[in-house]
Image (cartoon, rainbow, N blue to C red; front, side):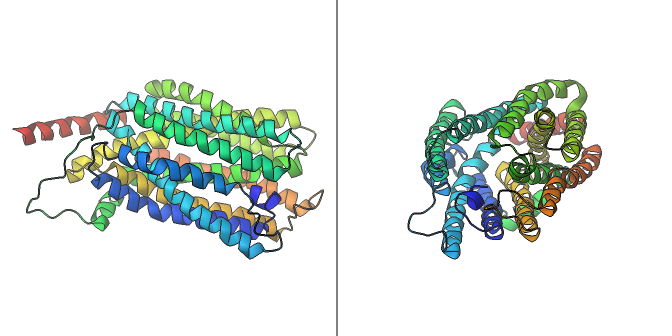
Length: 425
């Protein structure tokens, strides 16, 4: 919405900026994932990347929210290439921070339930940071500052906060690989990048996790991209910050409930319940009218409770997939698994973001008009509800057939323990 309503890019160009950034972000993931797996440092495989990339990450993030004074609104292609360049540079720094950070989880513990809890806490703090930024954005939106200044101030403060919290995370966690020495040269050649990627893709449970995650996050991002337009232009609400706060706040609180419930009914059970609630909320959003603003907030809270499972379940599942990968190949390759999961997810998101922008432009969306046409409003309703719900249904089918249960994972750990004991003798 910033690109169309503040920078005044045409919707098609704005969606292309987002799509190009996501596509580049997807393809740099395997590179950094494999490199982080092969990194040997006194700080550890993952911490070393986070330490070096934190400051570039913050600086480039702030540039996202600035309308360059040297480019006029009429210079559409100049604005387009500015935001494309910033997006590519930022997404490189983002991957260098985020991928090693996420790959820490399976290294820190092998306990099935503890990994679910750890994932829940990780995303609770992630959502908490988003809530803080949204709350500050909501406060700024009530001020008399021009929108461009509001976004620039929000981007700058969020950038500083992100740099500080990255270093706080490094200081407050343990990278078990810290001080790890380079492997001793052997007659066995090191696996190529392509071999590592192929090994990961032949891991059957990993393919299920990719599918579950892709469906969940494609549906979420379609909704998240559309909801600001839906709330503003269809429901007639002045600011969408309150809706975003409700969705993220309910998701953050629900994470702890789902993590605890997962100890009893398992991750698949949690995913079924959460996605069911989410689908009901999506259907409700499709049916409401501008006269039901109160109900809209209730449905958004219910959606947030379901969305929490999209944060929790796939990222908990992949921690166990990395153990199976070690059993199959003899190597720990968390970075490779996580990078491939994120790569395919981002490709899907790039397609989704481009699709929303192109659909709005096709149906005649114009941010300068006080009201949108009926065709635009209908497109917003379809994009915010029925289409994401169909994608969620596919994710439910994949979750039903996911093979790595708690008992299967326990057997994998037992086999790994026996192998390590044998190798040490």
